[in-house]
Image 1 (tube, rainbow, N blue to C red):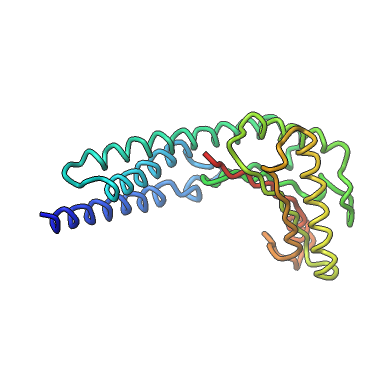
Image 2: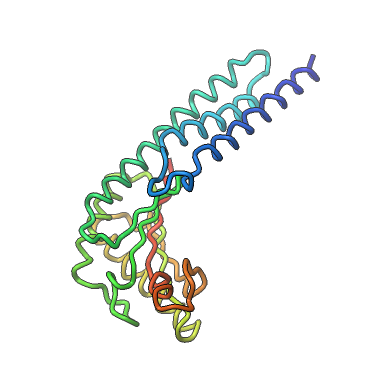
Length: 224
């Protein structure tokens, strides 16, 4: 009986993991150009799959109740998290005054991408005063949705020395983070990273590509 129970659990676990894989494929944002897909639906499916796995592993295996219960709890939690991210992303896109600021919803986190051209003068970590209002919009959003941590990452192109770019990217990240904190975001939620020239999103062989690489990414990662 114990052996059969364990085999049943293994079969169910593999099946639910398969469902999770299928849900990831079926909601690939690349299949929906110009949209992030339905993150609420994705969160519900993923949460149900993970909850079902946990139910199968931790339950007594005598009935399917443990799996169903885990799937329901996980599905609700996933749907709530996905809905919050969808809502926060939509609000930020609507509230930012500068159309060059991107809000990218990956399904796991939000990335607010601010180009150097709107934030800083060349080779400077001093913020453009006109952009402080958009950073305060972001701070207000972070305060409204406090269940997250924030990573502010500075990026440069590969012009100049790697050491100089590393230092510049760190100073720029610190400048942005300082405004978020002055907007009321708890310091413990915010960390800064200087990525230098190490994480390009475009070629450094053209002026247009280098301009894309000079940016600050503010990554919002849900914690609950």
